[in-house]
Amino acid sequence: MVKTVPMKKNYEFMRVYKRGKFFVGKFITLYVLKNDSAVNRLGITVSKKIGKSVKRNRIKRLVRENYRMFEAYTASGYDYVFVSRISETVPDFFDIRKEMKFLLKKLNVFDQEKWNCLKGC
Image 1 (cartoon, rainbow, N blue to C red):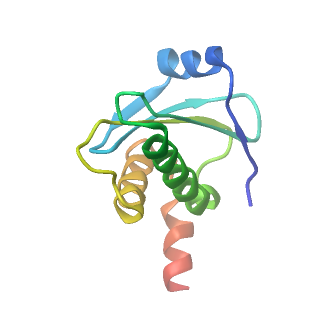
Image 2 (tube, one colour):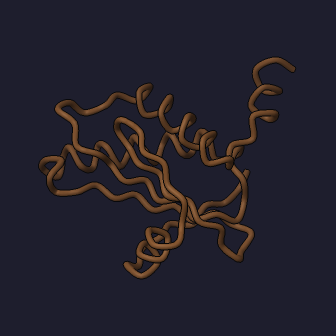
């Protein structure tokens, strides 16, 4: 399985925001930028406008767990930043899973052949 390293520094996030490609979904926005290493780097941001810390941390946990499920099927050597969007309700696990797969496919970093082989081989 591919090892993913967390992004923690502000300048790393800003570089992905300015130079990367992005696509917007209903609950999350995904920014992707190619890096020069063989590992993926993951960043998750949730604004204080979303709610109190319990709600923000729940959304971060859901995004992190869903990314962990798709980690083996994503392309290596990319920086991924997931930004949560404001909504009335907290999205559940399967809403985020469906949207994350859609966004990864849209940005051409999801390996559909490996996914299909897992389902049908």
